[in-house]
Image (tube, rainbow, N blue to C red; front, side, top):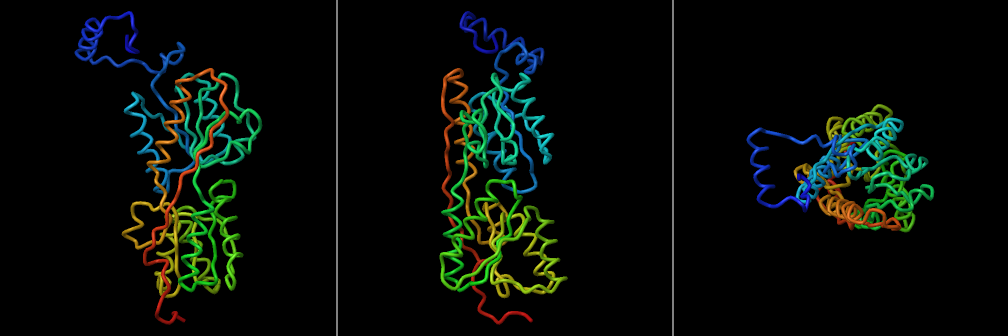
Length: 321
């Protein structure tokens, strides 16, 4: 009856719902899953939640799932073995109807999708790098290369010539794509030079990286191009604590356009997290509506845009010495 069984009349259904409300009855969704019925739950598995990107994506995923009558069941672990174990539990345990994997390590694709697994959508990773079993898994990624070239062109026009890219985790697809795009974009411009260092993706990591620069008396570049806004914030804080001006002495750019980026005056790359969530949930529920259909994995990419703010501009005053 709770799943709109057609043999139950509308009048009877409403009477039962009224009684359930009076008794405060709540159905056991896990028990429903064990019986092979829809649970209404969508499993979401992420390795991190420290940056604003992950929190925003979860919020928008929830916004997309609720109107479809679903709820999220979330889990977090940075460790590959635990991530794989939780993914298997979601995919085969009868707890959820489908799974959304957020930014898994590319090492995940060394493991195989099993027959009978619930539909899965991958965000910010490429299942195409996995074996044949991943060929029917959908993915939603972002246009890293195009956005990075726009960012480097902006810095070039500002007169910045010596750049350092602070990469993210080495097994993260976005980190790999951005680092490669950074090198291509720098090499394509006469008189510009750049290097890639890693990695930092949290405030603490960004702060510690700059502290290391200062303690070792390393010369600063014209601009730091940072993997995400969260690490960029930590770097800006450490630079200012050390007496450097941003952007007077060094420019800093981020990525994601987190909620604090505008207040911090951070030049960054805007990702519409709402669009990513909409695409991921749309792909997943389309799969749920056509279970058993032999469909190839669909690959979607979200466009990005540049947000120019003070931190990426060229300082007009002499550098601090």
